[in-house]
Length: 134
Image 1 (cartoon, rainbow, N blue to C red):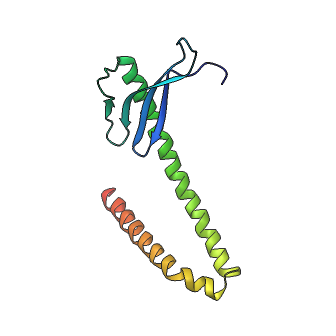
Image 2 (image 1 turned 120 degrees about the vertical axis):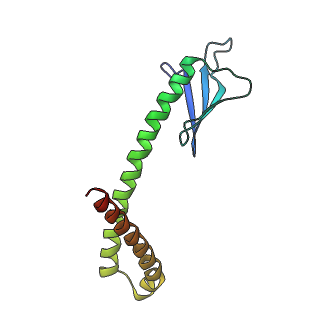
Image 3 (image 1 turned 135 degrees about the horizontal axis):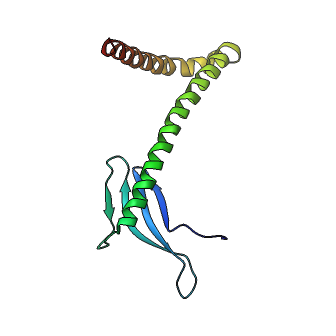
């Protein structure tokens, strides 16, 4: 590794991250990763590891990371939806132009149920938005 390492490393977990403080200022000049906290982005909780007492700087850096992470996940969510729309269009083209009867038989019911479920939710949510905006 070259260059300057960050002071903190965030090992991503499903709900946030395990936070490590990076230390290279030791006698062996090895990279040491000291676990200092667990950050939960769903509820905003920051739990120090063991008997550790976090500094204001630690909390500030962890909160900054949590804010950035939430924004990134929100961008990924909407990107995934746009990709799903693309996949639906590709699936339509496949069903119309290349799918065999056997392939269609395998996927038709599952696709129809999923599309019906999605349509039901979207229509209900649209109606809710229309009635609350009046």
